[in-house]
Structures are given as structure tokens and as C-alpha cells.
Image (tube, rainbow, N blue to C red; front, side, top):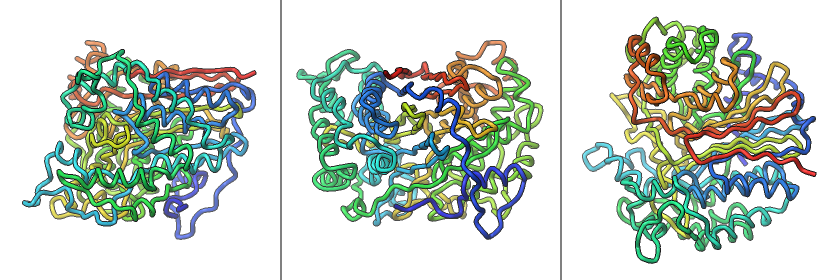
Length: 583
């Protein structure tokens, strides 16, 4: 399987260069020794836990752990169950990024299960006959929107390396739940009955209607025997079953139907491989934060944290309006750079080193003033010229989970079908992703090339950013992540600032109000801020506007030195944390 491009250096080396403020030379640096296994892994050897966006997914993961499975085994069960009970957010025909922490070696591996564009994809595939971007609703529900699904092949690679149980045994709870049925979750019912385009398309209407033709309501009994059949094929034929006939044939046929048919072929499915490599790490406070490499935008999260570390946000605390001003301005600077530079590094050069360069970060941090400034332009990291930028939307089609097994191994994974119910097209009881609409619709903007333009075989830029945090001794401290489209970056940043800078509990950090500052806009949970704080922020030029970027789904675990696990789930969704002490 291919590794990440060599331009992304080994993690310990990145951290050393960041701390020294050095630039890499033409010779790839030699990796340092891996960090020591965490104290928590050694002292909590028989404690396991799962946090995910629905209790049935948590229970499925715990059941695998109780049978002696590893975190890798449980991830397969959690992901597949989420596909059943939370199909608006993720699915077996979607994509994901995953970090795996091996407690015995202290090593972290990054797995990239991002979808790929077909070989026949064109840079103008999301433009109309006049060269203008297709209406967003038409694009996201089109056959062109679907890329080769990557999440199950990725989980197959994780299982091959770190699994204990046989692959075919990991789906029992999912199959029985799909066949026997379960109460329709409130969040699923809310979106199935919404005005979004996908749930009003024929596939979703058929799947979510009762015998009288009425759309399921919260608590109604919901069965999905077709999905059970698809999962049986995964169990019997392996993690590439979705990429092989008959499932691949059904997916291809559905995407090549009108309107706006796509160009996926079996050759595209045959060519797909998940990428396996090393994460990117950077410093924040006394900690090291590790995330996936591009095409994930997670390096931008590291940049935002680096900018904030050059402010006094830690001393101010969450009740101080200046702390939120600093957070908002760092967010705007981060998005300006992210929208310009982040893309698939197999196709364009991505300034991973340069965005985290000490002098460049200091230069960006110096732009933060006493009140909100003008809309920031992209910066110019060393050796890179600013060009066309392409922003992305805040979406609801994503989820996150964290798993801890009895040996202290940890999975943190963000998984997605991109938009709500993906493209709204389904086969065998599961929805197809519309991840290719994460590409820029325009290949050029104002005469400049867009890094995230469509290309054959290319992975679209993603905001999925699973996180691992290590202390100064290299011991695992936390694992977390969130859904939320492009807002994932600030949801994670908020949680990390709350946890590491303000020393809140993990749940308190998750419960902090969300603020998504990008361009000229300051979207956020106005009702969750104290009125006096909102008034003070408004006086600083930060007028928090509700209505966008409010539904995070943070899930995570903190590992205490005495072996305790502190799990948390975002109150904004239906998730939970469950911890079990094995006999």
C-alpha cells in the first residue's frame, strides 16, 4: 500500500525541527526514537472504553472488546454500526482518517481512507455549460459527486496490522441490529424529515418510510435488511467487498444514472488503496499534538494552535472576551492559509513544514490586534507564493469515535459521507458519499490555479482531523476529534484550548460554546455565550451570528497518569462514553 509522500517527514523529526525553528534540507531527516508507552496504558491494562455518536455503536465496539478484540477490531464494529444508526453522518461507502496508537511501541500510525476521483474526472466537472459552478444542491446529489469509497479498505489495513479477532466475526451485532430493527434515533428522524434535498430523494424516501408510506419518526421501529445483506458480504468476502462486484457494480450503476451521471468504473475501484504513513505533529503549551497529513487539513489546526501559543489566551480563560477574540482571529488566519494551500500532496506541493515554521507563525500571530481586523489574506510561507483560495462549507455528514482496548492501544477516527446522507443515492441500504464536492468547483479563481482542483485519482481536501495529544515525556494524554465540515478544525481547537490551556475537564472543554470565525463572518452558538460576554465581543468587532457551524460532535478520552480514563461525548449529539473493566 502506498505511503504518504516523502515530503511529509517522520513525526519526531518534525517536532524537533519545530522546537529548533529550523527548516528541512534536501535530505529527509532521520526519525528519533518513538516515545515511551504511556503510563495509562500500563496501569489500566484491563480497562476498555468507547465513545461514539450513538449508544448502539458504542455497545457494538464494547462487545468486540469484551470478546478479546483490539481497538482495531472494535473500530470495524463501531464504524459499521454508525453506518446503520447514523447514516446521515457516515457510512461504509464513505471515507475516513484514523490514527492508531500502539501502546507497546509508543508509535502512532496514520491511515488515510479518503475517497479518490475517477480516472475520467475533469477539472471542470462541476461547471455548467457556461463555465459557471453548478448549483450546490445539484452538485451534491449528482452521480459525479461520488468518489471511490475508502473507509472499509482503510479499516481492513488497520485490522491487518493490529487486529486480534477474525475479520468476519466483527459484524455480528450490526447484522442482528439491522435485521431485527431498532428505535429510530431522534437525530436520524430529524434529518429524514428535514427539507434538505437528500432525504427527499426517492432512495431515502423508500428507505425511511413505513408501510403506510409515512416517513419514520423518532422511536419508530426501523429495520434495514438490505444493509444486513451488504454487511454479510463484507464479513464473508473481506474489507474490499465494497470495491468488488456485485457491490461495486451496484454503486457504479447508481452513480452513472441521471441527473449528472458520474464516470466511476470498476478500474477505479480496483486501483484504490488506503494510504498508510506517519502523522504530523506540532507543539502546544507543554504538549505535542499529532494529526493526519494532507489531504487532511489538520496541519492547519496545528498552525492555529501555534498562533494561539504566541498569545496570552491561556492566562485569560473562557470568561474573558479577549480570549475569544484571540481565538476568532487565529481561526481567520488559519482558514485563509488553509483555503489557499491544503490539497492532495500527491498532486500539488503542500507547505506542511512552512505553515508551521516558527518565524512564519510569529508573523501571522503578529497580525492579531486589540480588536477584530480586516479579512486576512493568505500568508506567504517560506518558498511559497499566495494564489487562489477555495473555501469549504460546514456540513453535517461526518462522525467521530475513540476506542481504548485492554492493552492501552487507541483508535481515534473521523469518518464521513460528506453531506447529509451523502449524495442521497443509495444501494443495498447504505448511502453513497458525495465527497468529490469537497474539491473546488472552479479549477482557477481570478486567473490563479486552485490547489484543490479536481484531477483523476486525486483525493479531495478534507477537514477530518483525528487528534492524539502527548505530554512532554511522550506519554499519551488525550485522543479526540469532531465532525463538522470545515468547522472541525475550530471545534478541535476549542477542545484543545479548553483542555490544555484552560485546564478544564474534557467534558467542560467540549461544552464550551462553538465559535467559527472565517473571512468576514463570526458564526457561533450565541445562546451559549453569556450575554455580557457577547456584548463585550461585539465591542471588539466580533459579532457572533447564530445559524451556522453550531453542531459539533466532539468525542474523546483523556488518559490520566494513575490509569484512569476520562471519556466524554458532545452534548450536541446523541453520543456517549462507556467504560468497562474486564475480568
